[in-house]
Length: 80
Image (cartoon, rainbow, N blue to C red):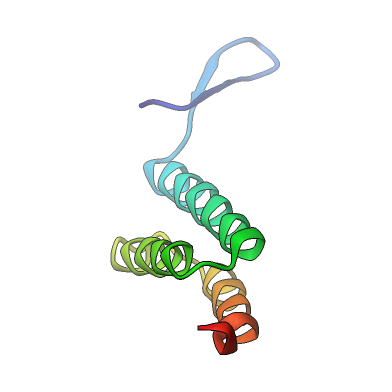
């Protein structure tokens, strides 16, 4: 899946693969994070942990992303 934008001269601009990977990882993590915050179920917690682990292994997880995931899991960890 190639992500492109148009410049002011209407020439396609292709995103750097690392940026595209980080954007996808952040979007997936954001979705999992919100789902877990709303449902607070063990299944959604495991899904969030798995996505964060995968993104980290691929080098697509930023320190800020990891901090947000960890803060959310710390706040809700007592429920599980």
